[in-house]
Length: 488
Image (cartoon, rainbow, N blue to C red; front, side, top):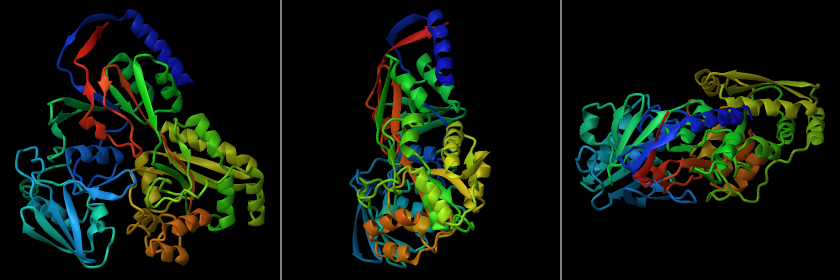
């Protein structure tokens, strides 16, 4: 509420003193403001959401995903003559690289050869079972595997780099060169791109404070915002006649991570108590954006490996307290919850703390800067933590997150969950049974799939939010050439 009042006061002042100077046709950039800039525009290294979303527009990959998250051809189509061989053939006349050289199978081979050889790439382990990459001709190559992997095509989502620049050890992280719809121009405080089809300039600027970001949109200093706003500010924008807000369901999964090596959290009744102690619907209604849905497992029900029959855990504080007593826990149960210093994350932690207190759980909140927090998570230094899986497309995530042999650094089983029954189900890819067991065993506490939204100024068309939060519509978005310039 404080954010909304502040915006209202500032906007009243600005609109009172501003008068339109002139209106006419001018060449203007399309200005996109984000909460956090990309960290690395080399697709072999990028792991943060902003980098992944932008890299989809700078580069093109061999494979993409359809609406049900099944792999589909992007730059190439494929066949598998046998379980250890995948033959990829490039589409006819793929777009050239931004430095005008054609994209060929040699570039694909060079990209994946370089990735496999990188010891410090977070993606290299995905391709440890590649025995060799055979170049057949300029449009065809074959991946030879050491072991069977029916999901191999789904992993070939790394943007293709030009071979000549790979050999020159070009710094793609700060000066990317791909063959996607956006071509890099410069990166100082602002990231600037030129769209290949029409030379539309697109800029990205980082404004971490959500209130300031909204003010810049209202003031006409930026044209587009997506995500990373508290619901009060989204609701405020929806009331502004000059702003359009669009919402959609999302697929990004929020959860509470658990350390199952902890003497209390290894007890399933304690985990069940935690699941029943959270009023998800109240949190969604009060502090989440529209279209947020209560979740039961990582992948949403519309995913091809989803499980629509599963239901989210219901809020039942009496049952939660009874489960703790049945587990032999002396109340109050004291637990430490780690989160980042992000205002919304701290707010959610405070709500969880308040909801758990009547159940007999005293939740101590420790908010840490992102680097320290995530380092603790990766190294198992936690009892409870809160995070969101972003952009997950393949059901392999279940093996990586819960497989008994997937402890870090080889996988993402940070809670050290061990379940031979689940391992067997995952190996057989019995997704319905596997997700049902995950939901029962609670190696984490599922919360919700965050809704997606976008807000933009008058004159913007062709942009809509996507379930995974991607920015793909930057390739087609248009900005009216008729604008109003204001001065004060």
